[in-house]
Length: 533
Image (cartoon, rainbow, N blue to C red; front, side, top):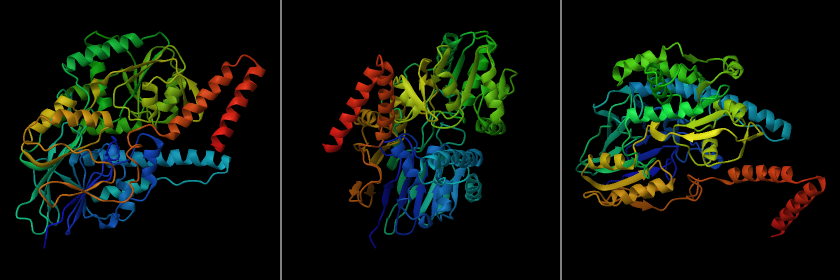
C-alpha cells in the first residue's frame, strides 16, 4: 500500500492567531494546537463556525503551550466530540487549568452583554463558543508529558517535547510519523512560539536537528532587536515610567496575564529597589494574572530568576485585585499609579474599562509591551487613531501612547534564523506560519541563503499539503474559510467603525445647524449614489 501523509493548516496561516495544524495518515489524525482566533472581527467569527474537520475523528491533540491563541478552542473541540488524549507539559497543563475556564467565563459574560444589546435592537441572541463548565470538563483529557521523552500519541505517531523558551511549559514538538509503506519515519518539528535570547524567566529555546519538515513561527520575522539585554530593557522601562509620572495620572499597561505581567513586575520592583524609580503602587487588575502568579510560584525552581519573581509578587507595593468592586476602586486613586491589566491586545477584559476611563485624559500614558494583531483595539490605538469606540461609546484619544517591544515572548528575525540553522539539515520543507504578511515575507527572504534548507513556503488558511513524495505538494481544496486578503488584515468592521467616528467628527466640526445639515445631506446623497452604483 502506498504511503499517505497530509498536513492541513487550519489556523495561524498568514495571521498570528488560531494556531491549528493537522497531520493525517491512513491510520490516525493528530492535531498540533487548537487555538482561538483573535484580531479582526472577521477572523474572530471563525471561532463560532464548525471545525473544518470532524472532531470525533481526531486521534490525539498535542499542545505547544497554554496561550489562548494555541489552546483556546480545546473546550470547543471536546464539546464537538473529541474524546482522545491532550498531551502537554506539566507547566502547560497547570496554566491551561486556569486559562481555559477563564476564557469560558469571559465568553459567557461578553455574550450576556451582547445579547442584552441584541434584544434592545431586535436582533437574534447568540450563545458562547463554550462555557466555563465546558472548559473545566475538557481538562480531564490532559496528559502531562516530560521534556525530552518520546511519547506514543497515536498509531504511527510519536512525539517529543523540547523547551521553546517562550512561556512556562512552552514546547516545540518533534513528531515522528510512520505512514503505511514508509521505510523510515518522517521527522517534523513544530516550533510553537520560540522565545527570544533575553528572557527573564525562561531558558534559551532548545530543539533537535536532522529533520524532514519544520513548521516555524514568524511573528517578528521582520524585526531585529539587536543589542537587547535585560539591563537595557529595564533602563527603557525606567525612562517610560518616569516620563509617564504626572501627579494625578496613571500608566496603563495592557499585558498578557501569563508571563508578561510577571516579567514586568520583577523589572519594576528591581528598578524601585535600586532607587531608579520612586515607590509607586502597582495594581495587577486581572484575576487570571493572580491565579497564574500562584502557578509561577509553584514552578519557581524551574524558572530562571524564580526567587526574584517570588519576591516581587510578595512586595508591599503590588496589589492584586480580584473582584469587580476592587477593580472599580482603582478609579478613586488620585496620585500616580501603574495598572497592569489584560488583555494584552485590549480586546477584552478589564483593560478596556481602564482605557475608557483614561484615554481621553492628557495625564494618562498607555504603554504597549506586546504584539498587537491587525484589527484589535490595541493595534488601532498604536496606529494613531484619534477616537475609538469602547463598550459602544466614542472615546477621544488624548493619552500618550508608547510602545516598548522588548517584553515580547517571541524571537526576532535573526533569532528565528539562528534557531533554524541549529536544526539543520532540514531535508524536505519549511513552512512559515504565525505571522502577518510583512513578517512572513521578510523571514522567507532572510532564510533563502541558508544551505540545506528548501525555499520556505507560506501556506494560506485551510491549505492542505501532500507530503508523500520527496517535496510538499499543495492539494486542491475547497474555498478557504478566510480569504488570504482578509487574514492578518483590518476588515470591513474596522473600516465601518472608523467611518462612523469620522462622520460624527465632521458633524461636530460643522459651524452651525445649517452647516451640519449640509454635511448630513451630502452623506445621504453619497449613500444613494453608492446604492445605485
